[in-house]
Length: 542
Image (cartoon, rainbow, N blue to C red; front, side, top):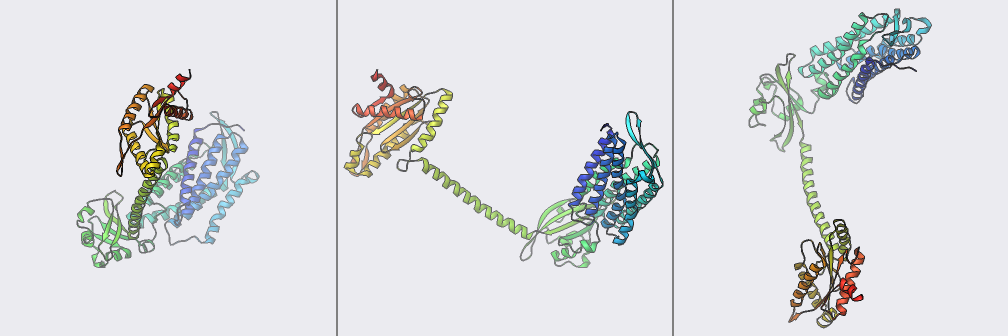
C-alpha cells in the first residue's frame, strides 16, 4: 500500500477530531436533541475522517471503499440535522416514526446504490484515478441518482434552517446567542457545500464542506462550554421558567420588572402582578440596604439573606441581556435557595473546628508519647533507645564531615549504699540532681542520656579528646561540690568517668560504647572518683 501526503488530509483530520470531541460532549448533555446532535456530529466525523484517508491513499480500490464510507455521512447527515433542529426548537411539528421511515428511504437507497455502484453506475457513472501534480486523485462523474440525493439533502437542510430561523425570531434575548452560534456554525458547511457543487468538475479537486466541519465543531464546543448550550435550551416558557424552583426576575433597560415566575413570587412573599413595571428597588428594597449597588453592576453573583422567620439564604446571579446590536436591553436575575447548603456549610465549619481541635490534641498526645518513648521517666534525660538511634546518625555525619565525637560515661560510686542507707527515694533524688547537673554542663549540640541504674552518657560532637577531658574534670569538680537535700540529710557522692573518642578509639556505636565502658571501669578500678580515657588504657598496655 502506497501513501501520499497532502495538506488537505491534515486539515480534514483536525476537523474530524474536533467534531468527535463535540460529539462526545453533546452525548453527555441530558437535554432534548442532545443525542441527535451527538449522532449528527459523529456522522460528520466519519465523513471528514474517511475523506482525509482518501486523500493519502493512492490505490483505487481503497479510495472506493473510503468513498463508500463517506457516502454514509453524506446520506444521513441531512436527516439527522432536520431531526435535531425539530427537537432543539421544540417545534409543534413532530416527526413521527412513520415520517422518520419515509425520510430514511432515500438515504438508505443512496447508501445501497453507492455500495453496489460498480454493478449499475447509477450514483457515479465513472470512478477512476488520475495523477495531478504528483498526487493521485479520484475521478468521479456524477450519475442521475447523485442529483436525486443531493436535491433531497438540500431540501432537508433548508427545512432545518427554517426551523432554526423561526426559533430565533420567537426566542427571548436569553437564547438568541445560542441560536446565532448554531445558525452560523451550520451555515458555513452549507455555503461551502453549495459552492463545491457549483464548481464540481470531473476531477474531485476538493469538497470544501468536510473541511469546514472543524469550524462547526468549534462553534458547537464554544456554545456547549460557554453559553450553556444543551444545558439550557429555548423551550417554551411554561415548561421551563414556570416550573423552575429558582426564582427568575426579568428587568428591562430601565431596571423595571417585566416578568417573574411563581418561585420568585414565593420568595418575595408579598409581590403582586401590579408590581410589573415597578422599579426593582421597590421589589427588592427589603432585601438590600442600597439597591443602587445592585443595578450599577452589569453582572453580579452574591448571596442575599431574606429576613423571614426563619431566615433564608438565596444565591443571586444577575446576567445582562443584549439585543442584536449589543445594546443593553435588560437584565436577568436568578435567585436560588441555598438555605440548606448554608446550614450544611455551617455544620461543616463547626465539625472542622472540632476536628481541628481534636487533631491538635492528637498531635500533642503523639508528641508526648514520642517524648515518653525516648525519655527516662525519672530524670527526663534521653534513654538508651534514643542514644542508640541518635548516636548512629551522629557518628555517620561525623564520618562524612571528618570531625571527632567524644563520649563520657559517668557512674555514681557506691550508689547501692545510698539506696541501702537512706532508701530508694533518696537515691532517686541523687539521680535527678545528677541529671540536672549534666544538663548544665552540656552544649546545645550535646545530649545526655541515662543508660540505666546509675550510669549516664554525654555525647559531645566536634570536640577533641583534650577538650573533652577538660570538660569532664570541670563536671567532676561540680559534682563533688553538689549536695542533695533529702529530709534532714545533705547527700553527696563521688563519680567515676570514662572517656572515648570517635574515630580515634572506635569506628561505630557499639565499639565506642564498649571503649567508654572500659575506660569508666578503669577509673573505678583506679580507686573511684577518677577520670580515665580509653587512650590511657591503651598506653598502660604498652
